[in-house]
Image 1 (cartoon, rainbow, N blue to C red):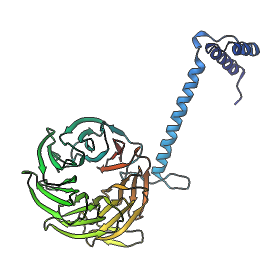
Image 2 (cartoon, rainbow, N blue to C red):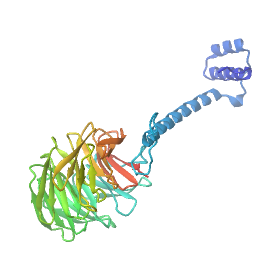
Image 3 (cartoon, helix red, strand yellow):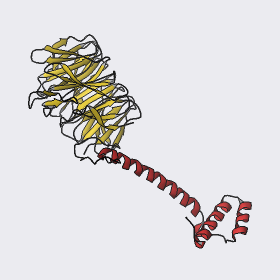
Image 4 (tube, rainbow, N blue to C red):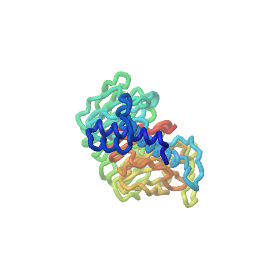
Length: 405
């Protein structure tokens, strides 16, 4: 671009002013002699530095906008040669809307409240924290455990919260008063997972002592114990109708249990390393077509026709619960898979991993159709989903809230 005579004169004045203010007297004298410009108006002194800092700020803003455009293009499939895809399937998109900081150690579990705009987090720092996920503000810290809090869950009303810990106990909290009302003793090792049954009148827990225990919520009594795993049980989940419970373990198996009969229905073996996480399919997933065109039919309107498991072998496996057969293996993560959740539509599965990513898998295609890389600065250790938001916790000690609207 060629400057006009007036623009050149203004530029020379600004450079002359900068040289004089900065103490470069000889250079200023030489410039003034060769350019024959007069000193700048004192009111305009320092303008060159102001313009320069403005340019730097604008460059930074341009880079930020280019990044956002790239992310939006990725989300909408609007790359060269690609076709725009309809949004509205409630999938997570970057950047995160909030980063919730306050824990002093790794985040082990996150859980949305069933009614309010609240998410609860658990940590190795032995505390439970309560957050407003729409404002990003911390509302409360629950203290009572004397070792790492491993797992948390709400009952269907949201009035009760249950937590399990490395201190070998389970605690029931009145979530309206944030007070611990009961402490349950019975496991002989770390209590790694705890859940309310859908009715709310029972709690199930799993431990490194290789057992699954059922407790009465009202009395706190242990009413039965299931055995069968040969090693640390990492996680348990229950179907929405309270009929089936699934467990995964360091023994590299997933077990499916009939709760009413207290019997193991299937032992599923296909992973080659410790299994970290499991999730039942929603009632919307009555049949699943795999990439090879095979259609697996479940019971219409029934939850738990299929089960997903994620393991340290970096894979996610989808199981047919009626037969215990592995029908699909999802490959793509570069490190341990730490969390899996079915999308309510039944079309997608979401996962988080120690490779720091969040992935959305199309089950029919058998591949990840959306990936958020570097979702955390360290391993992504846990997740929860409530259609409008995805929340993740990491080894970087923070929780992140992602919009899915």
